[in-house]
Image 1 (tube, helix red, strand yellow):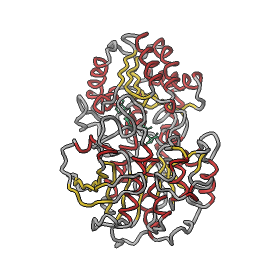
Image 2 (cartoon, protein in one colour):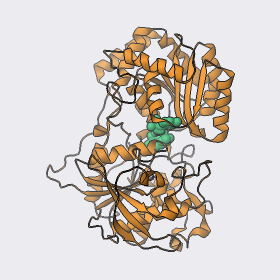
Image 3 (cartoon, rainbow, N blue to C red):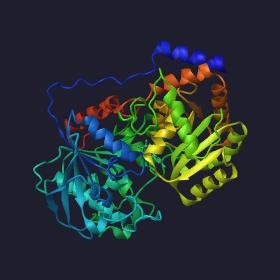
Image 4 (cartoon, rainbow, N blue to C red):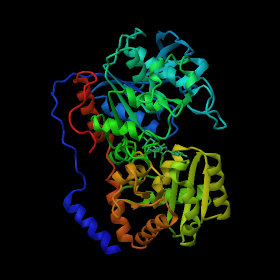
Length: 515
Ligand SMILES: Nc1ncnc2c1ncn2[C@@H]1O[C@H](COP(=O)(O)OP(=O)(O)O[C@H]2O[C@H](CO)[C@@H](O)[C@H](O)[C@H]2O)[C@@H](O)[C@H]1O
């Protein structure tokens, strides 16, 4: 086993792990283009999961190349952030969508955030999508249609903001009506729609069509109708000029019935037309183990003391026995997607084998309860915190030996890359972005089936590596340098923006986009 790993590491070192996409030759003098990035989360201000991280990092990484600005609802948390807001525009209501104002925030690093200011829709306690009890807001269709329509209005210059985007980049179902409203109104500004998670559709009854000012012809099978409902996500797919998702493997998976969430048919058509591409996410530069201010103590491949200091902190925080057993971490939304039920099932076997587990997460009430119960059965060996805490999460990536991420599907996944960067080896299912970012036996451990047996096989391989410090060290070093930073990961978006901006509207982009 150990020899096999060492051999693979040597072979990889000789070959150079990264294969890079060919770089499109762009005119060095091409001017910065105006891009509106439409999203429902932005990590600095409001974050539920990975969409928040990407929305904060991707536009920043593009700032040197484009005049890119973010549009997001003016949630209570954002108004409370203390960053000054100037009102710069006003938009009328349409059907049941109330009128709103547009606010502008200038962040210290130069990124400009536009806010859709609409107190009756956004100024509430809770998350962007749900109340404090986790129940979806009943008017989410109005709240996020308002976001999409605001983007379309800004693209049409209706808000008179003296800034009009040349391309609109919408993300996930909450922003998906932006390209749709633009298409229904005959606006020709190019649009890009990025799917971060195909499982969240943004469904509402067909009867909402007039409320949302959706033309009746849009409620067809080829456009927005989905099993007798309106699907925001499907509208984004149907109307955007191009669609991306966040890894190459997920881009392929979603064209199959197993992963397509009922949309594999339309997505397959998009592939055939050359309109669907997968680009793996990057990580931002705050993921630097030497200097991250969240950590108890920094560390590097030359100086591991800080990793041990973070491990001891995590042990205390989660009430875990201080001993030599491997420390496993779970940092995750506690939802079916993430295979949390599988982790509950393997937890006892990990403990029996001498492991300890620290869990932080929140999500579906049944999975939260199941996780808490597993923790109560193994005091000192499994500690569970229900909640969301960025500092604790970072210390867990830094302090743990392994990250458990047995996702049933994973569009890209960021947690496994954060773990790698902080020297914790992910144990993950070979799916989506996990398959694209983890080299089995080199920068983590992959297993194929969503079963306890398959999962335990990978856990046992990890435990075996743990017993061979020289192998553990070699894998950690490889893992820490493997995740791409956004500075590099953003280049395919830059190229795609240029292609879309230089293409006749609605004409197919050349070449097979899905590789
Ligand atoms: N309890 C907690 N406390 C603190 N931090 C916590 C936490 N629970 C989760 N997090 C953090 O939330 C983020 C989760 O991001 P992921 O990309 O791993 O998954 P998510 O499913 O949310 O994102 C979706 O969008 C992203 C972005 O494209 C895709 O990578 C992914 O596959 C897709 O499912 C990470 O920053 C993680 O550290």
